[in-house]
Structure formats: C-alpha cells, structure tokens
Image (cartoon, rainbow, N blue to C red; front, side, top):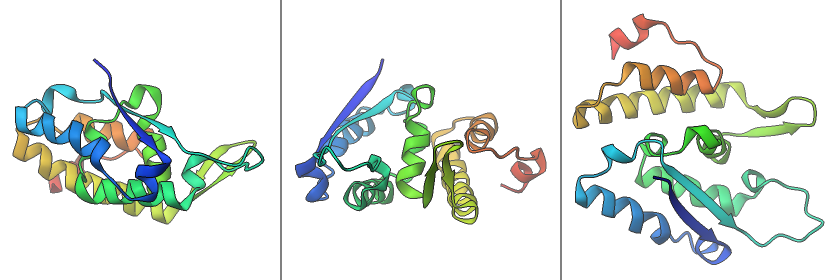
Length: 157
C-alpha cells in the first residue's frame, strides 16, 4: 500500500513538517512502521516560474525542508519507495550534485560517501533496535548509489 505525503510551497517555505509528521508519527504510534517498508512517496507542488529550468532538488527551500525532515527522521530511507525512485530523489535533496544531459544526476563523490556511511550507521543501529535483519537492506541501499560493500564492512557494525 503506497503512502503519499503531499507537500506544497507554503509548508516548504515555513519548514513545516506537519504533512510528513502526521503520517510518520501515526505509523510510529501504531507500531506499524515496520510493515510500511518502501511504501512512502512524496508529491511536491512547488510553484516555479515556467522559465525556471531547475529541478526540485536544485531549489534551496525544497532542499532545506528535506534536510529538516532527515534531521527528525534519519531512518527515512527505510520508508521511501525505492522502486519509483524516491530514495534517489531523497538523496538528491541532501547531497550536493549536478545534472548532466548525458549522464543524469552526478553527485559530489565525497559528499555521497559521507551521506551513505552516515545512513548505513544510522540504519544499522535503528534496524537492531527494531529487530529487523539489516545486511541485505543496507547492501541494496548502497548499490542504488553505486557502491558494492564487502561483507567484512557489516561484520564491523
């Protein structure tokens, strides 16, 4: 079951996390967070001038909203619907990047590594707290970003 969080310009400009918090906090209170793995999507209605060529992840106000969301729910990648690209879009909101017409999104390599390592540590700890097997999930997440992690890395966690 897909869960959609709708964002608009007003909540983004106000850094208002209410649309997301209402949904996520309800799942937490119901103890249902685990059963909603990879089911969350965002619809973003952000008013741009029709001549503005920027992607949403290039707009500082939109990025700032997602930075705030990530600060509150650092395990958010667990909920994001990876199949429809929500994880990659989420990463683009948090990691410096450029767009290439030939190669698509190009993340800053060092920033991407730092982001990935931070998420691996956060999610590894969170998975342990939730009693969720983590190794394959974390490996899959890293692979989405182009990293193939050795099993020895997970032995250290």
